[in-house]
Amino acid sequence: MKWYLDFSIYRPGLDQRMDESIAKAWEFMQAIKPYDPTFHRWRETARTKAQAEANPNIETLDQLRQTVYQSMKPDLPGAQLMLFSGDIDADGSTLDIQLGLGLADTHFIALHTGHNLGARIDADEDFADWLIHTGARIINPTIGALSRQGAPLNPDPEPYDFGPGWKMFFHRDSPHWAQAHALASKTVPVAEGAILTYGTPDTYTQTLNQWPHAQ
Image (tube, rainbow, N blue to C red; front, side):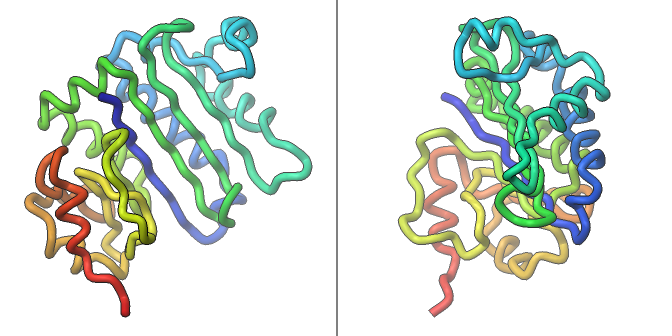
């Protein structure tokens, strides 16, 4: 089973400090490197396998920064870079970096796992805790979630305006701070907020569906 680890960061003026988010993405990439053999090699995705295979390895922060800025298009306000780990057709992961595209001063850093890494999350909650804790500590997001691919979604928008996760990060300034804690089965402080666990990988959507919706 594959998993998504998504973080959203909102800070006033963040679009003027894209290097800050790029550096956080790079630090996260280095932190997770020992935990999957494919993480020792990252390249930009492409339209074809041949093009992706030919793309250079991203081996330094400067290379990552340069690749992000090269991905910018003159008719769009921000940047988006998608990287894949390991060899072509390997069971690797992808890392999505979006800077100021959908919403001003809002950046997204998201890891979408391969099957092997996803199976480890399924089998080892301590590792799942470590993964989201490491990401939250480095990125210090506004909100984040570790969610299983294919988990049922609420047909209505979530009250906290993010996808539901088995484990979620909420910033302490979030207007949803109290309600997020009310439903959580476990809470761990980190960065400027906390990671909250909602039941199990099989029940978290049911737990979060109990979140009151505004009338």
